[in-house]
Image 1 (spheres, one colour):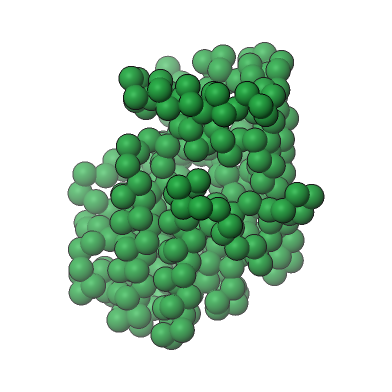
Image 2: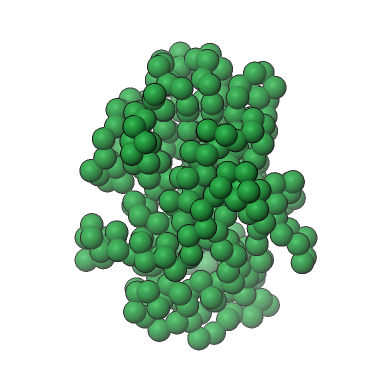
Length: 329
């Protein structure tokens, strides 16, 4: 059995390659020629050089002989982009290209890695679940909007006959996060930048659980369904305290008042205009940090037997991997 993985050079994709191989399934990675292979270090896999815009024929050829396709690739580092065009090109048009190729190649199961960001914000006192719909303006959260539009493309492909399932991970923590996405918490803590925390909260999930959810979705997920791949709901203050404890730094002592966040967001924009990505967040993240984005992950737990690794364990695993692979020097 063989599976194509896009985004294999990222955290989820690399861990998925490892899990597929452990199950005796051959993993084929579609990657750009210039892509770093650091996340895939030590793993066995086939490789196809190309990208999401190689053309339908080339993408279908990359899928030849594959039973499953895991479309993990996405523009996720939205706070590091100067413009949002790339988000929509990769996340929407790129997904559309992959879906068309999968239909052409006769793929048996297509797993689309969306995001909890595609679900928008929950109403006060309620949890986001699989019935939630994106309810923000595009400019308020371009990344979430782009994933929402990508899900619409997936549903069109399902109507055309593709056996596709959507999974919506929350904030992912774990090994092989070479781009320091969820892992940025560890590096910010080590630099002493988690002394203050915003007032909101989010859900955090271990990458090993996200991978288990992808595999279960391929094996027994219901076509046309979406599954939130979630772990623990935590206020940012609690999450930062756990991270600081793991890395041996003082926990945050102050929760920033919500009324201060608009001023901080404006200051962040000004600072990024001068310092660029040396400022680790953008104004969108600052504004959203006032929200409590908690989710109900019971559907995936019940239907996909999604594991529930504690947040602290996920942080410890990521921290150990960074240390073992000399990222903390």
